Image 1 (cartoon, rainbow, N blue to C red):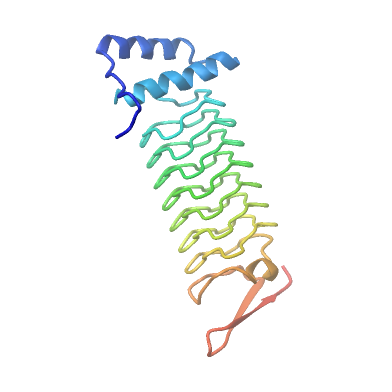
Image 2: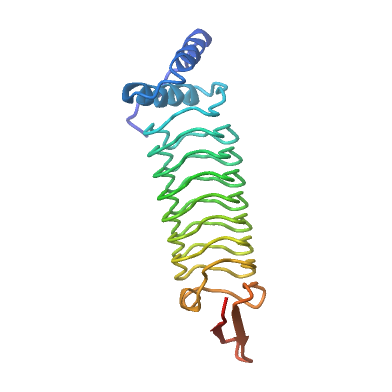
Length: 237
């Protein structure tokens, strides 16, 4: 049995007062307001209250760890260094959001829309990003180790320097993305579409896992042998 006291359910009047308080400081960007916004959202979420839209809201540095925010609207918002560790964010909308340096370690983002989001230097380790839309997103220097990106859309994404160590990119759409310097050690890329990917090298692929269904850009030729080993040949781009 947990020693933690059970949180009392907030009255409708208290919930409405918190929503009004959140709306009052919605546009504030000072440190105290940013922390306060996170605390209000936590109280509302724990009380299972219907949450307002967070679209275009600045929640930088807020602690939103472990909450259930699935399906919520965060599009166009600012979340610099926000903590979403272990947060449920399935089907959430982060279109065009500023998520630089965000910590989403272990968060569930199944089917979330992060298209055109700025995730530079984000921590996405162990995230469930299966079937998520990351098209045209900026993931430069992001940590995406041991994450799930099964059938994710990474079309035209900036993946320069991203770390995909032990991440599943099975059947992911990576077409026209830029993979310069991306770490693909033990990345699973079976059936992934790498058509028209920029700056991919055989050296990067030497430690990746892929199969005959994986599609490569024209300047990468994979020669398969009867024993299912293969050789990667780098052609002129």
